[in-house]
Image (cartoon, rainbow over all chains, first blue to last red; front, side):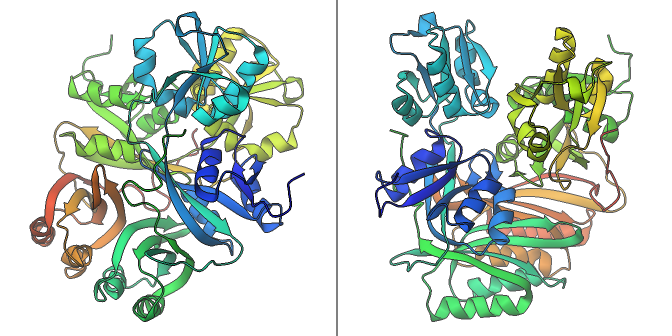
Length: 286
Length: 286
């Protein structure tokens, strides 16, 4: 049972997942973590009161925007209340007392294994084996108690399950970051430099996207993201994801009103403190 | 040895991968397939003459644009010569003579397993087990010769490795499509309705994206994709991916010239026949 007053934060994945690390860094070390099996369960947990907040990965520097989570966000009534960027730093983890020379098989999610190809090329004696997820490969290794087995996961997973770090930062590409959004059921006041995230669809008229961006460009509002996405079952129609740097004020209200006149649908996903500046919210997973 | 004159098409993954299906549908049934372990090897194979063409997944309706492949394309000198969209239809495959009731363990890549959660919820007697890839889980099942094992992969994988289809289309979301680009070392003349794909970075000036889109909007040229992407190590600077529907002619040349004046870098990735119209290039994987 959680102590009264601790924030219950839902993530997708197990304890020790990169989402868990992001939740600790963004919300604080004294959260009550709620783990869910998949993203549908994650959104349902927030909707049915099983958590106070939900942390959702929304884009990755290597793999792009996670459209299925934009879809869930767009069809929900949740509000984005914070964002953060986590560096995905892969660690080779083994049993206490194990050594790199004694390892034979290393398990992880295939996406994590693929991010560490150079490491495996340098250690041809190691056999990479697929697992359902990163943190789970550590807990399973610990349960098996086999010092010839290793796992690739976050440093947090090593700490939580009692494994030891054999090697840290074994991913090929050091520019592997995932952006997370923290969702709540109510908006929260954003102070200081703020971002606003929008999803909208435009009327099917020539040049309408150009005019839509004019609503912001004409008022000196900076965009930090724009992305089009074909709409299901509606050929030649698109949804757009847009982030702008602007605290809610009269200028941004006017820009949104102008955009609304050009849109067939528009949902403000939330206004929240800007959390992606270089050097802030960076973590090495430790 | 391949017969002289067959087009050698490189893919990432094994025979029977969804990329293999896409290569057959887009280039034709009589290709010589060249399999590569990862995307770096795929691009290297085209560069070193180990294949005539390379087929690259570039975006997926659920998972978004594959930024790492845009990066590889942007830093290459290859040309996009065709595109297609493949429906990702997951099939449950087993040994000849096996039945659904006799299956106990079903292997596949965790992403494919996650796309079939409803199927596993309806069949709680089946244990999902992680594998390095979809087609490989079929070939391994066949080698093991165990009728209690199943695998989730394309219909093509069942055909190639001698498995039988127990169930077809078991994915939760029927709107799961991957867009592939066919790359060559030389441009090819595009006839009829054509698309042009661009990657560019803009001068850091207020409203510059709005002006950049004006180069196309002012000439009545339709965009089918726009996406921003933060540049590595250059805070507040972005690369943009843009697709427009336009055969090369004076109008599109003028638009590109105007865009070039606003850009710090611009690369035309290719002009190629439009292959994503509703109803065309659709396949059910069979």
